[in-house]
Image (cartoon, rainbow, N blue to C red; front, top):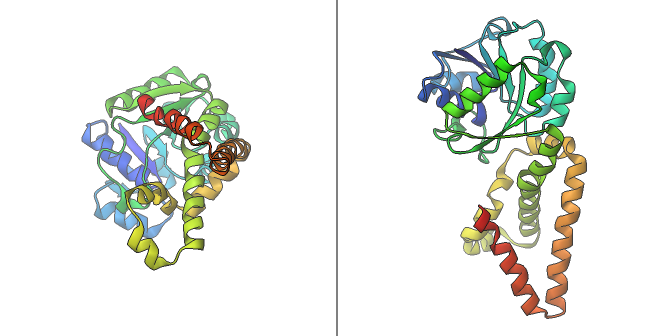
Length: 275
């Protein structure tokens, strides 16, 4: 199969590596508006060549590894595509994308969200093994033809991903708690420390715990602003629930309820029994 990858950053570049590693594709081509990204993707051998829209439309599989708003804006470009071409998007929120799929593309389109990534971006961030063993959420599979659904399932099974199926509305709610809220907390933690500590103290005292919790605050502000905007309702709900927990720990400290605090922490410890 010939793969066309739109967006040659961390996700797109790493996916190109994966399909080559597992022999799924005989040819991987790239499409990206960023000239520097095009150059880097070729130098790193992520793709065989950079293509225009006409050649992109001739691919057997097109993977959209660009932000959600860019996916929505790009979808009309794909209208008129062959009924045999599979389109898979990797957007971080799904409901907006599903609602905006042009009618002529609905049978081709497989909405997906790989639950993986790093705080880095661009072609140089592409790594081996980003997808293996990770979860891929496939949403609203009833909208696409069986051939495209089965092709997507074969691809993700072939690169050793764990497949979960759910509707796009449910996905956006769960992704908010598991992915989007942690990013908001990391940004808030980083800003709290930056506002109240000088750089020298941060350098001197920051240990592994702080580095782990603040790492994802290095993620693209542009991308995450869009994600928070697209998932606004779920974000507000999750932030309210997180605020309830912060108020609870504050109350326990104020009232010296240390036994209750220990039980509260023990409950949090149990999260990793699940993970």
